[in-house]
Amino acid sequence: MNLLANFSKLDFECGTDEAGRGCLAGPVTASAVILSQEFTNDILNDSKLLSEKKRIALKSIIEEKSIAFAVSHVFQTEIDKINILNASILAMHQAIEKLNPQPNFIIVDGNKFKPYQATAHQTIVKGDSKFLSIAAASVLAKTYRDAYMAEIHQEYPMYNWIKNKGYPTKEHRLAIQKYGITKYHRKSFRLLPEQLKLEL
Image (cartoon, rainbow, N blue to C red; front, side, top):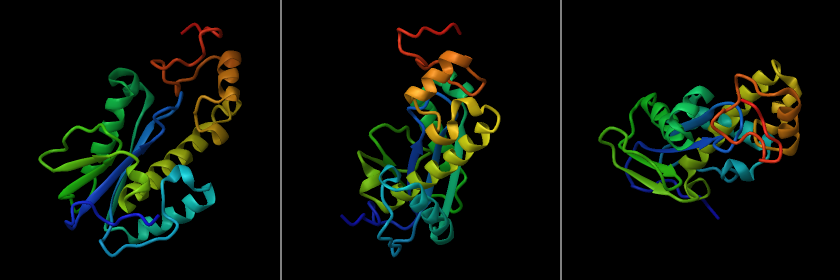
């Protein structure tokens, strides 16, 4: 299925998406991207459907061809304070705020968003597999977050974040059980299943 260029038919419509909502460690990362209505790409799709190699190749194309793009991390301490949904929306707002030019319409992956200033917006379930700008935002959010997790992996290699990216894999949970938690873990999340209780 070919992704659509634009929802509102306005120039400077931005798509926004996040990565890392379900992780046990690290930030939630959002991106906002404005593409021209003429932009096309046959490979671009929801980042979860793409290989890492394709995401990295697309990252360069998106950054070069977009009218504007931005990325923002909201870190685990803030996630623990305001909850993951609010942190995801905050990351999107911060990314949109960095765009130059500012968008005149915002399309958002998912069904939850809070108005950004006075700019009209539309939430779109599975938007990252329907609209190019949301797919582009999903690729940037994922690649920037993965790069960050690879960086902090150097500090705590026993959790293997370079591979699991902080998601609740069996390996990650066994490492938490064995080594405890780090400053990068989200303390408000259930880090271990009930049968593997953790003293925080």
